[in-house]
Length: 316
Image 1 (cartoon, rainbow, N blue to C red):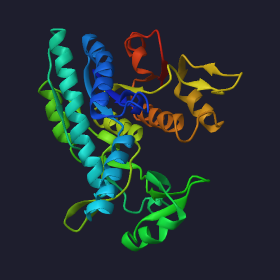
Image 2 (image 1 turned 90 degrees about the horizontal axis):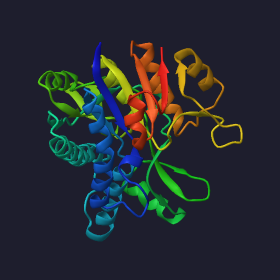
Image 3 (image 1 turned 30 degrees about the vertical axis):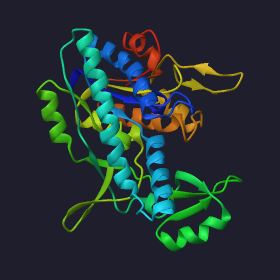
């Protein structure tokens, strides 16, 4: 195990602070703020691999694509290409921000982004019942035309807000560019990889092909951390720590908790399926497979969390 290698999974709040701050320039400013905390980790002597979410950014690309189709008859950009596009664009901003910050602090190291494919099982149950919503809402009147243009799309009604496209969210099985990432780490680089959970691919007769799906970013980060034999998986999110009974008068923050304890809390239903539960599942998989520690905290608490005084620490 590499005790000084940390996989840092940064969430959407590290990329878009508020709904009115969502331009590319706003995004870069938010990344620069988060990267200061990542540079603190490197200042502690760690080498880092950074993963990131991409949900809003994929949504923006899809919306632009749909407007271009309506206005100019342009083709729709496939979801799998949107994931690849955001890996490059966000990776560029993250690596630039981190290298600038390292130079400012006179710390060694350079950063490189790897556009990363992640293999999923073509028979994953999610392909038979897509349930991950993406893109904008549609009205009842728009649905027939969408079905004519895109017969493969699965459209489901989302309460009273309209119809949305649903896609599979298969479990990550293998990181295709793992050896390239390892080689870069051996050469001393910090690496940005597995953006947005990775570009989902399945095996076919000629090797691999991309599929329209969304892989959970935290589960993919956990798989990457295990493949790299990293000592620590740090998951950055919008809250300073994991809590039991979140949002109720009985809320209780967790400081240090064992694997068996967190498994019990998950079974008891303490963690919301669309927010904290995937992070807890990612932590469990990492620790079950030899990881030393998982830290879950907000960006501004990363420095203190790595020092052991903030955040939630999950240990074997």
